[in-house]
Length: 468
Image (cartoon, rainbow, N blue to C red; front, side, top):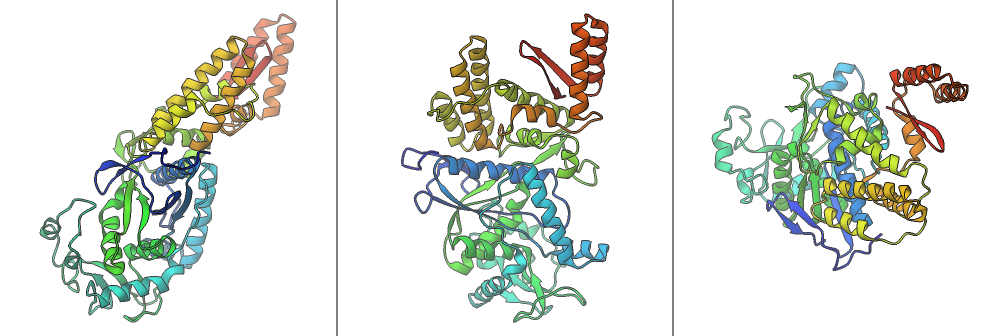
């Protein structure tokens, strides 16, 4: 691990300023980061996986460079979608959310996503949310409407639109005035929603109700990280209005600048089309992991820069599997050396990652190290091969890859018709056939294994296998 110091210069693209900036945390050596998490009414989808993995890599790298990272990722466990789904299922809303949170954690663990430092739930912060709304009303930035809702007055905040670069007059021109008669302005948004009959609610000075979506994150982030913190991240769809509204209500409530660096992951497209349920190209993480090994999916996601658009397709996942296999092939049969000092490949890796967490560049460094490892093996330089294997594993850990035993990686895959024991028995039968010079039978066994997705690799040491 590098010690974070003046020589560690990381540049991050800040959505607020729309340029790369030298990252300087508020407190030297410490990073306070908040990322908007899931609204837990359904299983996590591929877009969620993109955000989860992107900020996992960012956290891993900052820690690798010596920073103490306090990473908060919230859970929205009360909103319209949750209440609708729970009603459809005929179950209490918290039974639904508890089940979906457990499923989310299972998906994260399979993808190698580390747990955040804190994972606050909105329903645990109702008191903080009410307190923040009280302050906003007292400062004339919010108002209680006749219908029992409380709204934020967008006109009261001069900086509205500074993140999304949207002008308030344009938003007002495009708004339908008749949508909410209770609002003073069509652009105003709900901080507190009056409960409908029979709906789950909490008591408040404005009547029974529940928080609006945007205020949850302001209350949770400032409570966990302070009025001003270093990094706020999320998916591309959250930039407006969610993050814009967070800035407005947070800065009006605290009187302080909210966040120094805003980061947004790129969108997921499926076969070059936007992923959506209406197009029938919507995939949950679980559906994808039924078809592909988790590390292949993770490699696919980290092989593109976190801000870039990622195109999900069967071909692209298959290609990710093949390129990840090349790295594991280099490690196969090599015991990584211990206590290998950092060298040129580490420098190149850091250079790529210091430039706005350029994972595409860092992965090319891994492939360069793998090529040199393969050459060292061919030349009989076993000590050098062992050193390079250690470098590959060390740098792979920053991306959350290459931590499996290579044999386990090749033999895991997605289970097919044959068990590992059956495959080993067929390989032994093939070896016996070859020894007896019955090459037709040996070829038949190889072909049968290949038809079932099992690839054989013959070498001087014997025959190894992997699921193709």
